Length: 233
Image (cartoon, rainbow, N blue to C red; front, top):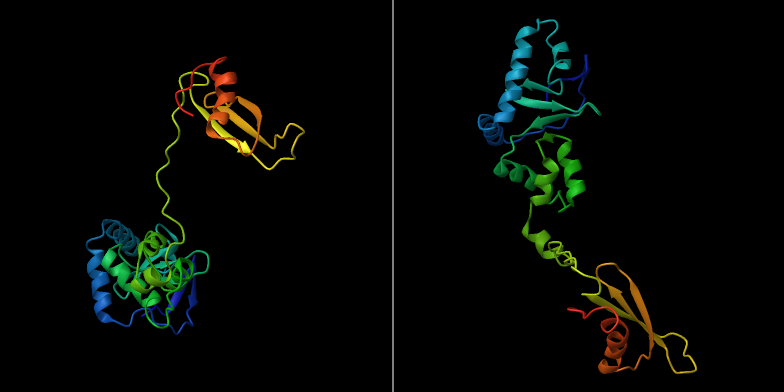
């Protein structure tokens, strides 16, 4: 179904590709029917048709290098020609049912091999083109992939930043630095208290075996009494 020649800028290059883009006439009719529903494609087709009418018979091919030079109409369908590799791609309207039908051919069937997003895109982009193709492939799901390729991490939740305290030392975060060389007094850990507003830090020598009341004592003696009573620790 591909055109007999490729037009790259102002040169008509014969196409020696023996691949056939579409085997199913029903799919071609569905694509043509989708053109009538896609306003963006209608605008492109109108511009391409107007450009073709203005061109003479001898310069019709050269007119493709003008407005919407990457698009042209042949065999009653719209084609896209990449400026990078001159690859001809059949333009498909951005209709989910059509997109999924084509993705299924490249992904779910035996020769598709249930490839990932990148490989599926490379396979499709050889012959097909539609707007936001990569996004469509990302959203596409099939049962074998959901079963055999599960997420290994939990979905990322919404960002919930900590509220900024109104005063210094109203909110304190604390942590321990443990397994340090033991001193003569028997201390082998450091308790770190951090102010939530100014990020000021206070360090207290402690022991790894300290109980909760023993941990609270330096916070009360050196922060609450001298600074302010904290609302959250």
